[in-house]
Every structure is written in structure tokens, then in C-alpha cells.
Length: 185
Image (cartoon, rainbow, N blue to C red; front, side):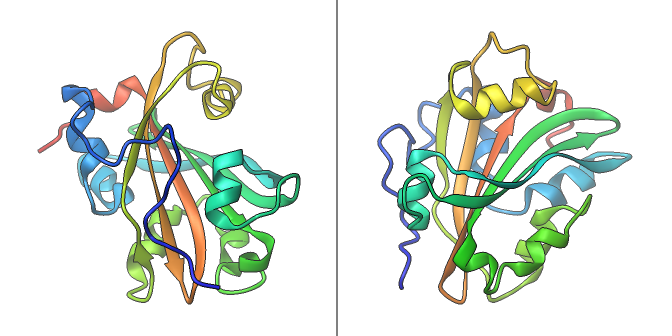
């Protein structure tokens, strides 16, 4: 089965024109977010908050070719820079892909997924998409449950598919307000 690197949801933007200026550089950077954070932090760390088999979001199902109400492997982590949470990351992979090239995702622990994605030259990244996540959105609720959002303000996120040997993984990164305190240089 072939997967398109172009995603087609209705609420995600394909262009950065409407992004807030304070987050635009972070949201539109095509490189590894992990690498960029490590370059700007004295101490970088990954804190897993929810890992296991859950239902993916409706738009994730369609992009990952997961039947509705089927389980997928979900990994949610908080990326910390100098002990401050700066990003809430959510990744989803189908069970079929988990039995295939993405099997190692289940063994990441506190290691960043970004290192695995960007160190493998066979991984192809799809187009970035952007979205303002309202407090009622399931990902915003998960960020609130993880203790990194107060659940009252919208958050900005980006996402893209990464493809390895024809199998996709969806990675969504929600940028917390503290990201603006990091040197962007």
C-alpha cells in the first residue's frame, strides 16, 4: 500500500501564513526539532506521559489507513529544555506498521523519536501542516492531562507523516508557550 506524503485533513493548514510570528520559526523549521532543542538547551530530556494502544484521532485514522475504532500505537511525551516543558509530542503508528519497520518505536523509552527519524536516510518526511489547537481538541486535552497546559488557551501545533519502506508514522508537535523563551538563534 502506498502512502501519500501530502495529507488532506480539513482543519490543518498547508502554509505558514496565518501562524503567529512568535512561533513561526519553530513551526516551520523542516529539520529535526530534537536537534534544534538540544543545540539551544543546557539540558534536553524526554518525559513519556502516555504510551500504548489507543484509538487514533479520526483524521489520523484516514491518513494512516487505520479503520475507525481500531487501536493504534500512540506515544505521547513532553520535551523539556533546561527542565522546562516546551513541546508536547504525539506520535501514532498503525499496528501493521508497528509489526513492520516501526517496531523499534515501542522501545524508545526516554529517547527522542526525532533522533531515530532524522538519523535514518531511508525515512522520508511529508509536508508539514499547522493548526491552532483549541482547548476542547483531544490533543489539547491530553496536554492538559499531562500537566503542560492549563486547558484554557489554544495551542499551536505542526504535524507530518514520516514514511519508512512504505509505512507511515504520524508525528504531531504541540508548542507550549515556554518555547518562545528559548534562544531561536
